[in-house]
Length: 436
Image (cartoon, rainbow, N blue to C red; front, side, top):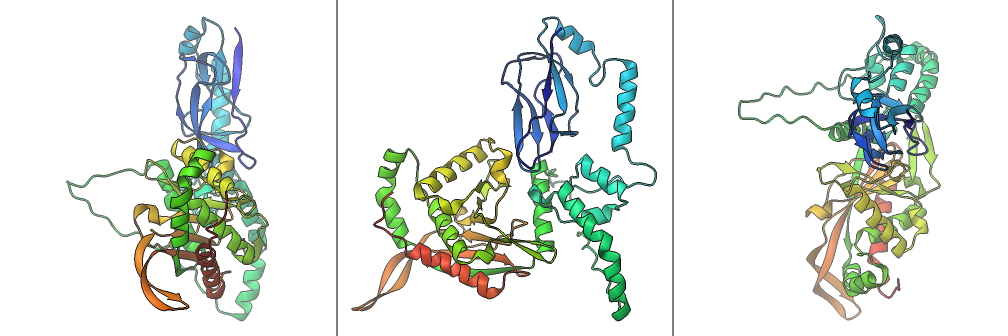
């Protein structure tokens, strides 16, 4: 009987593991080549993995919600016509009772905490088995692990985050002793206690899905990490509106793409980042990491109501046509659940379009580990004073608000305010004579 091992493929440069979220086929089912076999979730994005062979699925080596490492065999497919009977009668994990017992013991030793170890299972924050194993080995408590800021998607703690924390943790007691000798100790603030929620018989109880839990954790972590300040600027975008109305039909006929305002906004942000590179940074402890690449994320609403942030890499190196195609492709892939892990990683600055929901402005939350985010509001026709050499008069102009939230640890009001003003300047100075 020919058996083919299906392994967890590499799904991005920094992705080393994935959680099995749903088996689309069960042992005994026929599977066609490239037919979706299993759904997996990484720190970055959810994916359907296609089958690498045609035949009968005879074994699923990982159960739902278990974590597999890249390269692990997650399933076995047989090309033998008699494989259906074997699949329905064979154990899921091991072929013999002895092997099953050994495998069970191995899993218990790997996953189950010992009597003196934390299990890190309280709360909704997700930790991979690798992170749990390192934390247990180093003697971290659940509360200590929960206090670590993660750089994975939605604030997940990665192996790199944990190792970095442990390196600093090893020297922390020395610093604490020196401080204690010269100053009274100040108790660390305790985490706020969530308010008690009472329900009645008419209330509907809705369990958060996995992505909503991750978003929730990431937003709370960002607010705890960064002191947020928001600056607002109103921009006159009449020239952009008129230019787009004039060229959008020709643009579609020539490029096969609809041109929206989003690539124009991203272009202005990328130009302003070049003028103010200290907006394009991250913070690690007391170190500021200045990013060379300008990778702009665009917050995208999914049909489920959740949010994801695909990233346009090297946005400053793309012209308006390139930005338009990149924006449209990433937005379509996000809505159709076709984003790859590398599509949502590496962002250095984020833009969110609250105007698409009719909002005039917002106070966005920073997408960690970045230090700033901009919300663009709805474009509205407004009466405005127009200055001319012949005098001032009242006219109808297209205006919008830009809301810039930034991390006050490293971005002061002057820098944060000047940056959003510069973005508005680039929008107002848009060249209506440019060709595409």
